[in-house]
Amino acid sequence: MSTPVGSDDLDRRLSAVNARLAAIEAHLAVLSQAVGVPYAAPTSDEVPPHVVALVRAGKKLDAIKAYRVATGAGLADAQRAVEQL
Image (tube, rainbow, N blue to C red):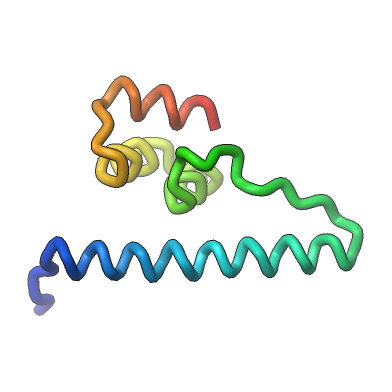
């Protein structure tokens, strides 16, 4: 049985995940350059990396929800942001 997660704990966990993702993307950029395979960094600084990852995984609805949670945007704005990725 899991315990409820508080807002501060969730923020801390998301920050840790975002930091790990940024490190992975930096490592991927170095590796791709070393082997001569182009790597395109995430398309927008405004869109959180975990939202971009959800879109790339084909989870559009989850990406819209995650964008709304991360940014506080309304449904229409979140849909527009995800569609532009």
